[in-house]
Length: 338
Image (cartoon, rainbow, N blue to C red; front, side, top):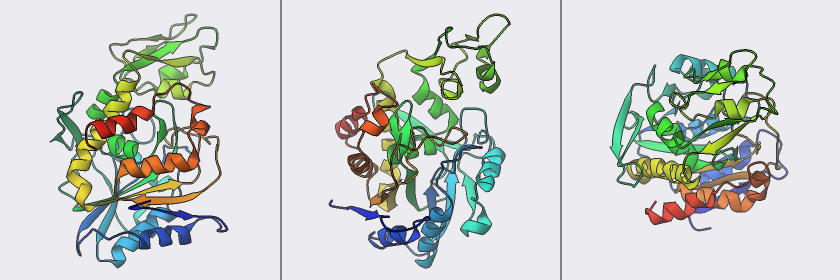
C-alpha cells in the first residue's frame, strides 16, 4: 500500500489509542511550526450513540501540538432540524458527546459561522458544479487532518473521507444542491400517521391533516432525507428525480474542489471502528455490522476510502442499502482527476 498504512487494533482494549499513535508516527508530517491545522471530524447528531468517542481526536490534537502546530476541530451546520442546525446547537451537541475544549486541548469551530452564513465560493469547473460553496475555513487554517468514521449511509452506501470532506466543508446551500435529486415517497400501507415526519421537517414541506396521510410539498422539500431516515415504520422511501449516480458525482465534485485547495498540506485518517449500518447523523443507537478493525492513514481521500472498503467489504453495507451505485464515486473521481 504505497502511501497508505494500516494499524490493527487486534489485542488492544478500547479506546484504541496505541494503534492510533502507531499510525500517526508513519505520516510524513506536512505542517510547519506554528501552522493552524483544522481537524475535520463528525461528533455525531444529538442522541446518537455510535459516534467515535473524543479520545481519538484528543490523540490527534496532542500529536499536532507536540510538533508545534496550533490545532482546532471544526464542522459545519446542517440542513435538517436537530442538534447541529446552528453553531450553538452543534457546539452544545459536541459538548454532550465529550468534545469540549477542556478535554481535547484545543478550540472547536463551526466553519460556516453562527448561522451558516460565513461562506465562500471556490472554483470547481465540473459538469454539475462550476463553483462550490463551503464554510470559510481556508483563511483560518494552513493545514488539515481529515478524520473520518467509516459507516453505512442510505444515499452514498458508505461514509468515509470523501463524504466527510464534501458534506463537512459544504455550506447549507451546497448541501442542498447535492441532495436536490431526490424526495420522499410514502407507502400508506405502512404509515401510521404518527406525524414525526411533519415534526422534524426543517422546511415545513411535510404536512398532515387528520384523518389524511402526510403530504409532501416538493417545492419546499430540500432532499435532506431526515424524514426517510427517522420514520419508525420505514414508510418513506427515496424517489430519485434523476439517475442515482448524480448524487455520487455531486458528492465527488464537492470534495474534489475542496481537495484542490488543501491537498498539499493535508493527511487523511479513516477509523474502521463502530461500523454501523447508518450514519452518525441519526439519533439513537445504530446497528453494528462489522467488528472493529483499526485505522487507515494516507494522503488522498479517494485512496483511503478505496482501501477502507477493501478491508470492510461492501456486502455489509449493501445488505442494508441495496442498489446504490457507490462505485461511481471512485470511477468519477478518476474521470475528473481527483
